[in-house]
Length: 117
Length: 107
Image 1: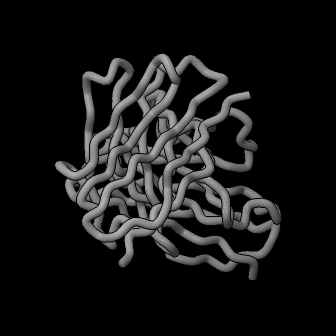
Image 2 (image 1 turned 45 degrees about the horizontal axis):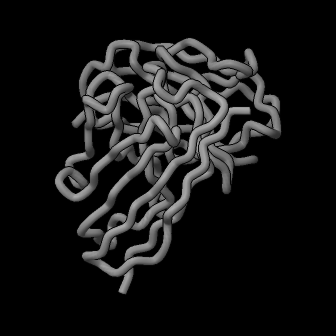
């Protein structure tokens, strides 16, 4: 069974840091680009960042570039999102998803990040 | 950044009706357009990619069309399971932007 399981969310103060993880199983991890998408409470989906097969290409939403970094660990079949200098507007449910070049086909259930003092 | 605009924001429909949702792009995305369905409390589900290709396991009542800047998602006969939020996403240019979503609610 294919599974993407996010973890690492929580409550953090503005200016703080958090690292999200996405554990992938049931598929050949290195075949896929991987993506982070977020959804603020009551809002639509927002693409955040992605990383290619061998981690040589990384793309970011303008509002997170320079604050967030994305990485992947092939030994652990895991994707990460390191988030620094967090702001209130980063509060959202964060999903990881596979990107096979034809849309985001497999999604995790998400992990919640709340930035508040 | 390409802006994706969906209309309407909310649509009240009855089961069995045919419904068409619209998605527009601020510049051409060719056919690099996906549609997702999201039910309350659940992750999105890929329905359509390449503007018109159904993803694995998606019922034939869902169809997509369009290219360039104008796209539609049609549900031929609404089932009770189809009441959800539908979002389009372009994957032609980074950042891969989403529309704001159209909510289908029961009339």
